[in-house]
Figure (cartoon, rainbow over the protein chains, first blue to last red):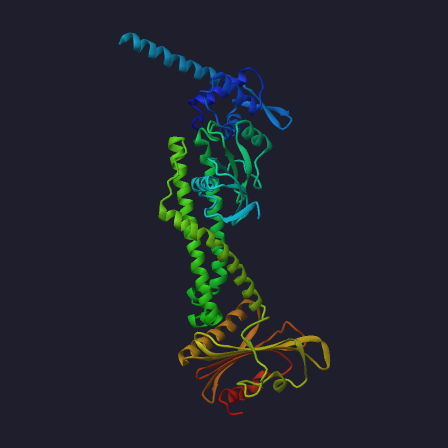
Length: 105
Length: 400
């Protein structure tokens, strides 16, 4: 079986999926959302974002839904939603484990 | 005074980090990148600035990136300037807070592999093409079809040295670009492992070599193309050696002496003398003609005369020329080697084609060796060339 490309999402990837949960967006809107949501902490360069979008599309996490001016619009797919939720659950478990570890100290 | 200046680009398409640093250094000197051709970059003069330059080689088609990507760059504080050697797009920012264009450099691995493959393929094709044209029939020497003597004769002294020089220059270019490709490959591995673009640390020697070898590709490519042109012209027989006006005391008979019914078409006539690394004298004499009674057919008389520097070389050349007639015959003609004999110490091979491609004349070949002298004659006409064998030998002996 082929290895799953995005078995673990990086922080910018996670925020990218998060941005599309609120509805369809173009690249610039995604970038603005990530900047605003993370308070400028998560940095996603325009080149990286532009490269990630077709890769996520190929993976089936997002889909191209149309064009607005010269900007391509994308929306989250059920597979993308699942990947986001899985990653969120994994992060929560990480936090729970960290909290428990702190109690044990 | 012009607002712009041009500079030779010291780095190739594969030298991503080095090029970025070079553009930043130029900007710090007050020269701001505007555009690039294949060899030169254009800069606008201005105040020295601490500008960050980046090369983006992803999604580049015909030296440009998609409009949406351009907008994303501009929205992120980056200005898209123009292409760099058509392989990359140069972007820059004066904002120290602007996020790097590639925050996760792992995504660059695949496009970087494509860029490297394209670069390598280009230089390999150039080497094969030019190498084949320069080296010419060396493969025939290796396969034993011809001797080194014939090979060297086809090159000639001046051209041989010139060709060797260009070949060496081309090899130096290829080596430099191969090193550049290797560096890109290493960079790709670093990116795949770390996801971060490493800092550029070009060594002084590496930088010096890059600045010399990369611009050298300009004259080397221009000279190579010029060489190709010259060779093509020579192959077409437009120019070879020094034209001869004085046609007395030649070591062979002229066409008029062989075929008195001919009308020479001077448009297709040429007669030249040359010298070579292994031959004291080379004469080439070509005449196209028609028969007086029939102006429609154009027939021809081609003769090559070599005075080789040693008898051994003459023997080898003779063997090559004879076997050339035989091999050519095996491929396409019903050529019959009718006579191989000696006359007055001269070694002679005569061949005639049974079925001529032309209705008017018969294609005939004769190769004669007399000491260090070798003659190759091709005649397409109504006469029987073998009737004149003694005349050829006597001329070689200087007896007529």
